[in-house]
Amino acid sequence: MKFLRLATNSLLSGLFFSLLLAVLIADLNINLAFKPSVLIKLTAFLMLSYGLLASLLCLLVASVHRFFIGKKTWPDFIAPSFLTLSFSLFILLFLVIFRENFIYFSSFFVPSLKTLLKIQMMVFFALAVAGLVLHHQFHHRKARRLYFSLFFVLLGSALILALGLRLNFPTPQKELELTGLEPKKIERRVTLLCFEGLSLDFLLPLTYERKLPNFSWLMESGCWGRLKGFTPSDPFILERTFGTGKLPGKHRQISAVQYRIPGMREQLEVVPRFILFRQLTRLGLLKISPNDAPSAARDLWTIFEDFQASVVKGERAAAVPAAGPTKAKSDNLFAAFYKDFLTERSAPFVWVRTAFYLDAESEDAAFQAKARVNPQLFSLWLDGANVAEMYFYKYSFPDAFGDIRQEEIQKNGTVIEKYYQFYDQIVGKYLASLKEDELLVVFSPYGTEPLPFWKRIVEWMLGNADVSSYHEQAPDGVVFIRGRGIVRGKAIDAIRLVDLAPTILYLVGLPVGRDMDGLVRGTLFERQFADENPVLTISSYEDVAIKK
Image (tube, rainbow, N blue to C red; front, top):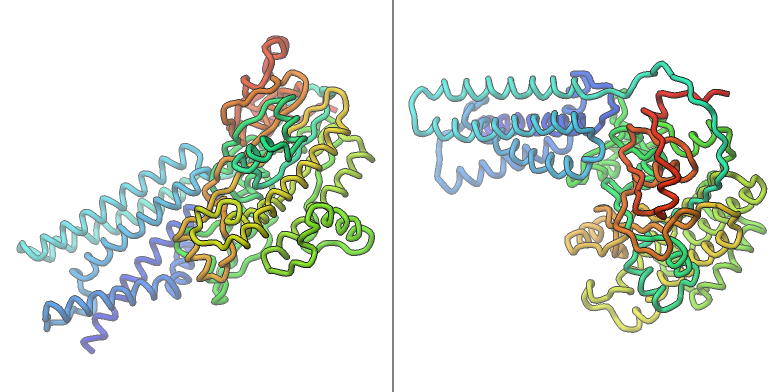
């Protein structure tokens, strides 16, 4: 019975920690139609995992503490002293988790929402400090009941305020009364090539060694530089941000998947980081499915189509390479670049081979569509280089990974280099097919960087020991721009991913939305071109309809 009292207070502490995590999840899911019942369901779900772990931690710490101080009395079934201390400490732990997630997902939050979340954090911090002070007063002052009554009144007020702040989150913009915009013929063509994972750490040495002639020519005939991204550097989010010129907080397409919790009708788009939340799928507590949420903002492809311009958007190939003639073509291409690896069967290289085949199939299908349609906007998005870097980065920069055998470095050190040469060939293919006055943009929304030691341990524990690089912290990508009006042979200051869409709209003579987070980057243009082509603006592409 005595131990049961301790266990009861520990369970209440775990339940409170689950409630705090539920608040975090509700805050991250900016598209979630929030109701108090959602918070209750999330808390009950989290109690089955994080709540029980927090309860066991409380029980363990309290038991060890009682053992070493020789305390013989046991707490009541509901002990205000125990709960005040545990609640305060769990609030501080929650704030650490909250802060890290706030920083990582900051692109989801428009300025007004950031203000609300900062207020929420300050309120919880003040509550934690008040709890620790009142717990101290309990043991050194009289009128003990008063101190605990005050803490739980403050606790209730803080939770009500947190609930009120969440209810005041900005909602998706409703349909507006559209104003007419005169149609304009787009004369200029645009080709967009996105190669995920490209990094100047590889590009610069390889171009210096004259191993990437087409990238070298792009540097000489156009401008180039680092491309600043943001976190989370998820390809789905980055593609939407590139297309709209808006951060996720405005375009609100924040996940390619949705998470289903048992017993909860509402589905989540975002789950917290840094607490291994996604590993709940291994326990069967979390289900993941595709998310088909509609966009809240028009993107480049939609805008071009609204102006009656033809568009070809190269789709990513299926997860499994095709068979038949397509496979034979990919086989020959693969053998041309990786002739020394044709018999390699290691798991990391199998992933690279699969990525290569998918890239080759996607590019070939897109190029044929481009030749057939002759579009005014063409885009291709490939991600195979990122796969090669993920598994073979350590062989290109072995000093960052300790003891790697020299024979392994000699064998695997050229895998990434050859993939860059594959992409260089693709660039050459599109350079050769460029029409007069066509704009070419080659970019990567993120680069790559070595996996830190602690992260390597985590990946090893999760069964991913071969992973050696990642892009979770949004290392700089790269951008190359070539076309009329673009300065030549200039390394430009880093521009942001959100700047590309408004800059492209400007270059083809279309107005730029003032609600876009990106800017038209004037440093890219020749002075005469900029003087002859002023920037045209409209309030937003969501506010207008193109007259037919």
